[in-house]
Image 1 (cartoon, rainbow, N blue to C red):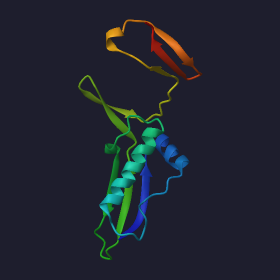
Image 2 (cartoon, rainbow, N blue to C red; image 1 turned 135 degrees about the vertical axis):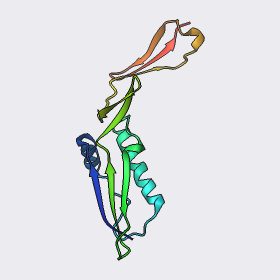
Image 3 (cartoon, one colour; image 1 turned 45 degrees about the horizontal axis):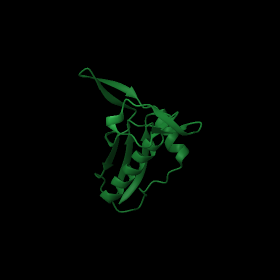
Image 4 (cartoon, helix red, strand yellow; image 1 turned 120 degrees about the vertical axis):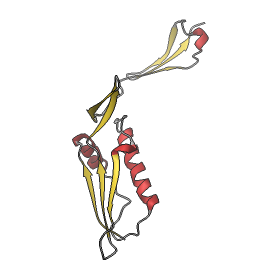
Length: 137
């Protein structure tokens, strides 16, 4: 049976996103331990961060520490979210903080063909952040 559940987010960026989202945890004190619920909780957090612009966030940054050594058959759970990630650069691993990425504009080519890759495009529709092109014939 789950007892105390603590969320530990070490990254200020991730903590802010999580708090602003107002997510309700699937892990509830008093519920029976269920591995599928833990997996779903991790999946929800992963989707939240990626959909919020933290593209390099992976499930490797998530961890559950489950303390089942208590004599009263209750289990404390710490849900841990790492502060940073490692990126490989020239064979070396470098620590990088998580950051939110923003998309400024999107270009869509509606009838692109690799054989016509050197041909010019014609703008069909253009808005502030979205432009649709087609190949000129």
